[in-house]
Image (cartoon, rainbow, N blue to C red):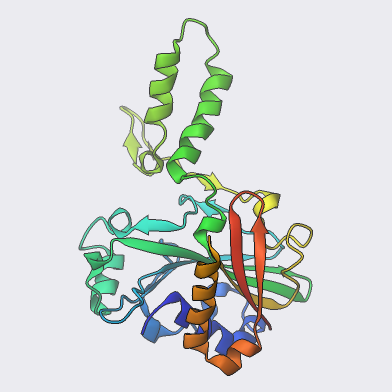
Length: 273
């Protein structure tokens, strides 16, 4: 079976390695669970798809490493809880598609993938590590975030009364998609081409590594954090973790709730490093 829970299990089993590595991508991630692994290309890691059983697998994992207790910035990709594989794999000749296919995945059989971020922050001799669902950072949809951001620009810069609200609305709509910034554009007679990149930084209120905002995440801990909306979902998460880790291992895990200031409740599984 392949899943983010089994990935978390592998982190637990090798948690002592976190103190030995300077860069997160040097961690001995379980190759048998992964369909692809790339540095600098989203996703950094992808879990294999299950063809049988109750778990789908196929989750994306992006690595976020920092030398301070701040979540490192998101370059070009806005954090989100789910992504469509067709927006990631645009060509069957691409490296991500080939890796997934060689790993035995029917790549497009699972279009919507859950997204997790493996976040590490370090301070002096201490560190905090969180495998966290992308919805922790996606409090509004990515398209709305882009659209509303440019809406602010439009309102701030286009205050000419001759520019109608309808024109402003069209501008906001045209600039609401993240993918338009990744295209390379060439201007006549220019010796260089240009493309824009979206840089996203986590606010202090949603910085899971911030000890003032989230004192539940102390130094030298390894955490798995995922959302739930009902008591039934919460118990299902615990039962799922028990089925993967086993009862004895789960007894040594601290389980508690985190209240997100913007986005509801999350369940945390915590182990000391």
